[in-house]
Length: 101
Image (cartoon, rainbow, N blue to C red):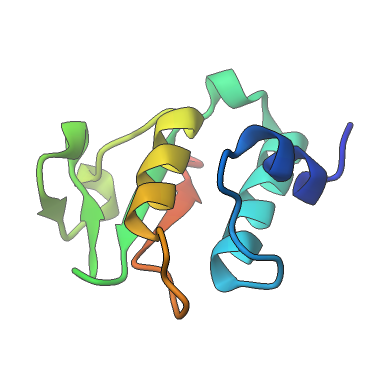
């Protein structure tokens, strides 16, 4: 199994800067997958630091509870987070969280 950082660099067309908070979040996410399940079988929630809420299902706004949060595939969650955090030099606006139940 490849190290998380190497895998992220291969999979992302525009990987976050090494050492950034976004990259640390992505490394944690990939390591969680490597320990827990295959990418295809995982679902992800997206936390908005900007709105202090979870993304709702189908990218339709925000909800305050994790239970009501939308679930996204790993690929879609990465796209959302990458697009939301594009060109940020400080803390990310969005972060992926593994749905562990």
